[in-house]
Image (cartoon, rainbow over all chains, first blue to last red; front, side, top):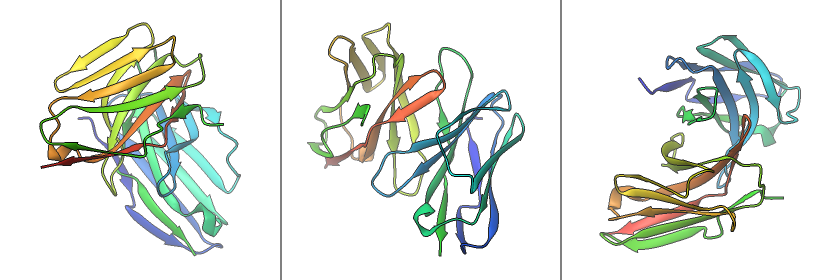
Length: 113
Length: 110
């Protein structure tokens, strides 16, 4: 099983809403990642969890709050987003170690009105 | 400052011929390089990778070449097939951090 699943596939939210994105993998990977991808741009790393602990936060605004409740799950809590936060949010996972191939989920397409 | 560059935004190749996608990087701390393929509305799919201690890795129709002194890598697809038409991202890693290039859109013409 090399699948990373993400829910929901699409999300529309207002600037005052609170919502969460979910990501799940059952490959035994102990590193999980959130990326943001705008149209016609490469994925940009937001957060990295290693062994369920946040190891990298690429200066992401606090309106994005990640959570890794266990080794298979990764959440991204959203609050008071701005229209410019509209993007495709990708989750990925990998082993921790020298060889780290990341496996990506299909993404959640987020629209902030 | 773009640490990973893919200077060709697009590339068109005839079916059956070779596709060569190029990638340059600036950070000498990168120790692992990956190529991903992405279709619209899907997440990137891993294709092939190479460690910085190697200069070539081959997997079926895909071969990645790494020239560390030139900080350059390339992906060769032989023979190219229409199903290979997608956006190809080069990515580089240091530590737990992965940096992606801007992508090259490959069109394989039947």
